[in-house]
Length: 187
Image 1 (cartoon, rainbow, N blue to C red):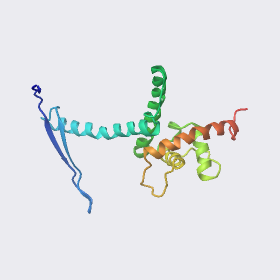
Image 2: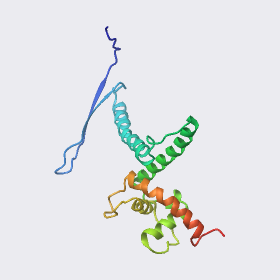
Image 3: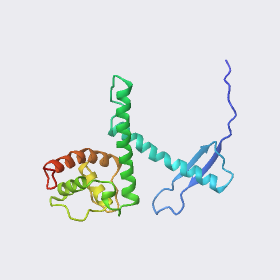
Image 4: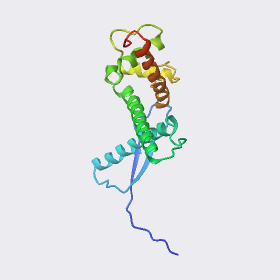
């Protein structure tokens, strides 16, 4: 039996890191694509798309390890779909926090976190009442990650998705306890 092969033209883009720090090895990628590479814009687009690939890998890692999606056994498709809808939101939020903590650490944390979320985490981490002014997003993300096992030693070391998702698991319970028993409880 003979196999049929379609003719697909592949283009190669070689990407090399410039200005490599002393003592480090330059990053080098050979990217194969069927997309056009005739112009500089097209080549840059290929590189941008490849860079997004890593974020997709992280997203699916959170789904698989954080939400343990492969371990779940559901008897019906609707149950799986409902769980998947929630797991996708958890994965998205974890990835969002990982990115925002690096790219926009000076934002007000209340852009993402409810008052009961950041206040309860603040009190647990610092062992004192939370301040009147909310901390920055970068500060609260580090605190959430500390709940998940992150060791906050260096200012320039960012927590990763794993410590953030583990911290988020604890955060929800802390915020609920804060609303139920804390100083801002609803009577």
